[in-house]
Amino acid sequence: MLIPDAMNRVLIAGPKKMQKSVIRELHKLKIIHIVEHSRNELADIGAPLENAGKLSEILVKVRALIAEMNLKKEDDFISNRPMQELSEVEAEVNKLNEEIRAKSEEIKKIEELTAKETAIRQELEILKDVNINLEDIANYKTLAYFHGHLRDESKLLALKNELQKATKKFMILDAEAKGKRFVILFVDVKHKDHANLILSKLDFAAVNFVYISSLSGNASANLKETEKRLLVYETEKKRIAEQINLLGQKNKSMLWSYEKFLGGELEKAEAPLKFAATKSTFLIKGWIPKNELNLAAEKLKQATNDTLFIHYEDAKKNDKVPIKLNNPRSIKPFEFFLDMYTMPTHKEFDPTFFLFLTFPLLFGFMLGDFGYGIVTLITFILLKGFIPKARNFFNILIFASVATIFFGLLFGEFFGYEHIGSFELPQILSRSHQIQQLMYLAVAVGILHINLGLVIGFFNELKSHGLMHAVFAKLGWIVLQIGIALLALSYFNFLSIPLYVGIIFFVLSLIMLFKGEGIKGLIELPGIFSNTLSYARLMAIGLSSVKLAEVINESAGEMFHGNIFLILTGVLLLVIGHIINIGLGIMGSFLHSLRLHYVEFFTKFFEGGAKKYAPFGENK
Picture 1 (cartoon, rainbow, N blue to C red):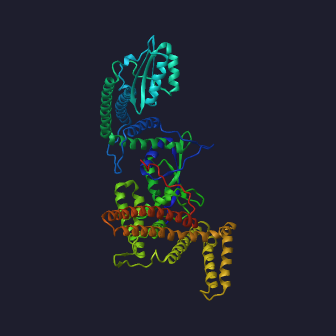
Picture 2 (picture 1 turned 180 degrees about the horizontal axis):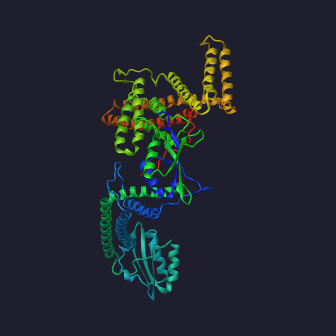
Picture 3 (picture 1 turned 90 degrees about the vertical axis):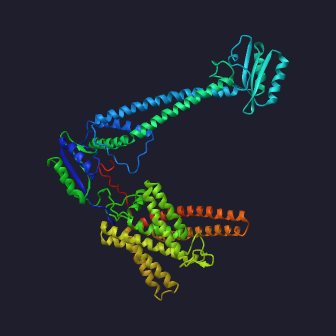
């Protein structure tokens, strides 16, 4: 639990004719974390198996079909399809792909027709209230025509007045169109330029009709026909989309089974790209959990008639060992925080157990309300059922909610109330009235948390660098705190001990830190105090939450003395106010608790930087 699984470095070498058998067996065992070989003068990298290209091509088609039909894989999906020859898989995938492509082409053609009819409809909408046949909007030898928008009726009157000064040979048709006047002007061709000049002065916005030039009859009748055609296209498109959806549901299990099968086969086919290779041999480098090594060696020898050379050894001090965490089911969700941060090295303790112990407590200390804890507990249990993919995350928050209920009982708070009616809730500490004591408690929690980190760091250093380095580098910080505490207690006469006792501890800690961490340790001296004071946020976040709850309660309480409308408003204020406060409390408590672990706690013992153990074949 506290220590990741021990790993052995493994070298597997054998003749190329056995390569497929070895790959197949390793993929089945899901046991080796392969270390990719880099090309050098001694050995090249291997070539993929001959079917890799074909597998990749079919897999791309399968994934494209899954994406196009938006097929979701259920969390409990298990492939029950029997194994098939690759040729049979390819034939089925190609057949389905051709069906989907044909239907997609039909939809594409319908969309093109729809786009054209939509453009026609937009132009007809402009002309629907104009009393003119569409064929009349054409080029004439003796007439010129203009069509477009004028801003308002006054511009239209101005146009008529200006034209009458120049000629009587003109005709204007107009209609209201989206708050403007749409105008068609016919004028004697001799006055075309003059009419154009008048229109430009009146801010005339010309409209070009591109799609309706071949139509005849009035716009209103054509618009009705266009609407009918659009409705037909829409119905046809829905019909084809439904056919695609039915095909998807019918072949959903098949496609996801093929995706899993082909993905696994492609992983096997491309595995030699990670191996070292010569003309006649291959070499696999990797890591296998120590407790599974004998099983792996026995299975590989059986699969290859004992023709392999298998060498293994324990991890050395500076090896980059992949990490396989080994935590019980109840603690495992807290590995989520390491996935976001980094994996411990093989020389370090796995901090997941300590996160399991302390993260919910810090979260609960900040949120700290019995009523809020009940609400969040029920909420996260329900969300865990609705969103199974986030199960681990919600399990963490469920633990945090239980801690919130615990601290809510200690603080005697229920939705910000310390008493309900005449009944006063029992409490050990009041966050509203004992603020100073709350801050002392928060700092005390910080001292305990930081020193827990230093103790863990001591054992990490003991494992990596020996006893004396561990004493100087980690216990030096604890001696420093003792020295500062003795100086303070002596100075303020809380303890009747000479001042020099504290000075001795302080100087001793400086010597220890210099020997353990060098000048860096002395430079970081102020950091231990700022880290400790950082835990005052436990008090600040919790206090802000309870004060906001009190404001909500007091504001709503005043409304309960009014009429029915005020009473209902007060109830609404309570519900919405506490929902917002709970949301802010969850977010603040989660983020600040996480920060205290990543910044204040982890820096005392955790280096990290390792890769997560990813055995060959695990994801297939």
